[in-house]
Amino acid sequence: DAGVTQSPTHLIKTRGQQVTLRCSPKSGHDTVSWYQQALGQGPQFIFQYYEEEERQRGNFPDRFSGHQFPNYSSELNVNALLLGDSALYLCASSLWSNYGYTFGSGTRLTVV
Amino acid sequence: EDQVTQSPEALRLQEGESSSLNCSYTVSGLRGLFWYRQDPGKGPEFLFTLYSAGEEKEKERLKATLTKKESFLHITAPKPEDSATYLCAVQYNAGGTSYGKLTFGQGTILTVHP
Image 1 (cartoon, chains in turn brown, green):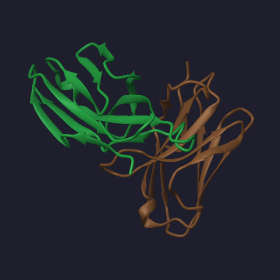
Image 2: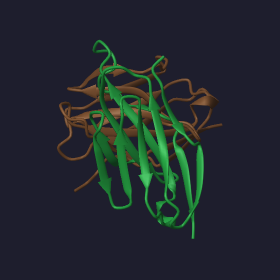
Image 3: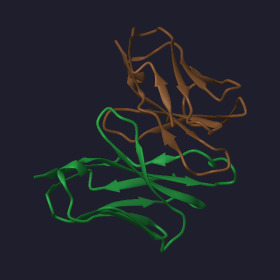
């Protein structure tokens, strides 16, 4: 039973560039949420997608955008990267009607 | 401001030395409180969900409890493999604007020495 799969695992980008991170949810799940975790901090909610629409958004600028595809997979896009965007980006999947969230192992993004 | 606070920030125990981690929250309309374990460089691993005050759940050496303002994660006779960061998160419904997202505390780093 495949859990949540994220790619790539590690990424190094230059300030000002754009990046796309990918997530495949756990089999049977239809909702995907994205979180940013800075070193030594708890994860911070970015946004949540269900039925290919953004349903809820945290306190992140418009540089952060996302997409959900018909197969429930999702992408997180970040434009105009800043040094402060360096973090572990986590994808969590769930059923819309259920509380249980399963997290992936994350993508470590380093902006230099 | 809705907030989740975990204490202590770090805890060092000897193998077999039982202790507790605390998670206090100030949100209203709690729908669930979650405990996760996170190993370095990995994503959070689900441990427990608690829904209402008075509820308790156990798994091996871990026991989670919930009151109206806080939750405790009790660790009985810990082993070195219990070393990890333990995260607490809440899900709450505030006029429909917060439903769905998890609000996390900053975590407690637990180190168990043999």
